[in-house]
Length: 49
Length: 250
Image (cartoon, rainbow over all chains, first blue to last red; front, side, top):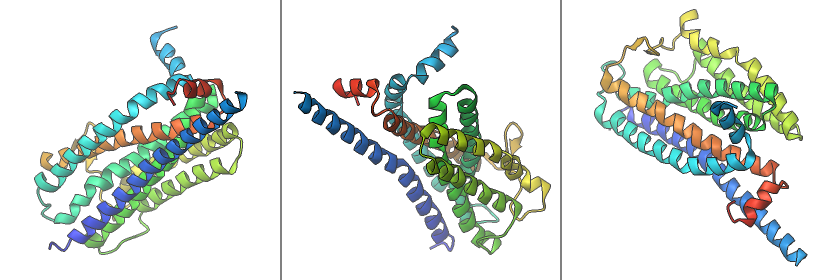
């Protein structure tokens, strides 16, 4: 193995991890928020009926 | 009203922005993925080994785009902040605040990957060099903007305070950029200049530029995703949100 390979693996691994975190967290948060809003609307709808 | 102003006003409407960004995000992610796969393939399998640094130089294909992005996002964050402060356009305020975590992530990636590259190249992970220190200050500025924003409960007041801090922090950007010219630093000088040519051969330069473009699409997709969430959260009791839920388009 090339002596520089571990450095390259750690650098890219850390970068991919940070980029995934920044991309995925808001997607999950958005899904949760939309579900919460839909649930609330459906509860309010049932109350009106 | 001219077409540009008409577009700005239309995009400023929360319902229209929510719809448009929802259409754009999958495309931005897709372009980012294609460019990244292509850029990484070129970086690892096409670009030759550097005769001085060996294989470790391949870290630049993430380090340099991340460093460029950390500065570009800061400029955009300050511009959005200024637009929010001057014209009180809420989408601009939301863009400014949503940019901060993405910029902070790129600043952190630039610091970490630079540090890892430094060990085999310079023999040390860190030196208090002008370029490294000013980049660390940029990371702290991002954290400051995020911290200040989350410390104030009222969203619009928080966005204005964060925008002011972002504008003050712009002074750090020329320091980062010119640090390698103003001081005698361990960090190498500018290799790629806009309009000024490059000291790298094309086989090394092209993957770098492809990765730099890919990260722009990443920023676009991540920014719109965050901005949509923030808008929805702020407007949860507004009519347009109720209408979207009713039409099952949320």
